[in-house]
Amino acid sequence: MVWEGIEPGIYETWNECKKQIDRFNRPLYKSFFSCEEAEEAYKSDPKLYIRRKICKKKDTLNEIDYHSLSVDAACSGNPGNMEYRGVYTKTKEEVFHSGPFQEGTNNIGEFLAIVHGLIWLKQQKFSMPIYSDSKIAIIWVQNKKCRTKLELCKNNKPIFDLIERAEKWLKNNSYITRILKWNTKKWGEIFADFNRKK
Image (cartoon, rainbow, N blue to C red; front, side, top):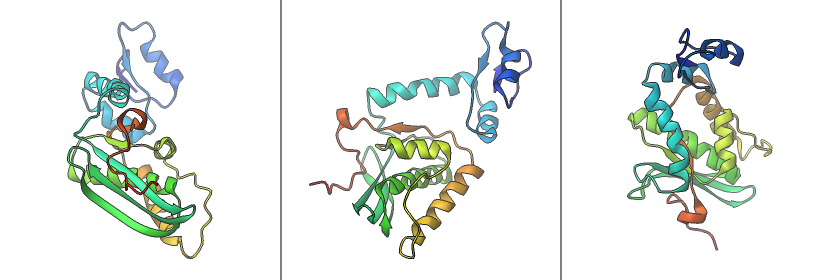
């Protein structure tokens, strides 16, 4: 997508975009995962949007953004009883909690927690970021697909129903919420942790 170039607009390929920024003094452009995200960003101030993305590494590596939502999952066994929740980082107040569900996995719970958080923040019209301590779940959300190897059975069908709904929401909705990796090594356990580790 090109905010400032020869012909600003949304382009489907890099070659089309490149034509608009070559030989243009100080172009502003960025790639997006979907047309919906690009359309939403195109309507906003590009400098603010790009600055927000650049701040992602700073937020992740240095200081906690306490005005945020932290999400986490817990699973007793693999598979086992799985649940997930989201808390307001500053106060650790729980804002949603789902489960336990039978025969789930921790990765699925982390994925569902992030998507639940995205939906909740959009409904509340909050612009705060989401913290997750799961690289796998973050990638799954970015790819809009839960890549679990867990097999469907009678007991975990409710979990697969949630996965289907989550994937559908990701494909049909856009969002500008930043999903940040929690720095466990520096900050300790994420504030949404269920505190059940032995």
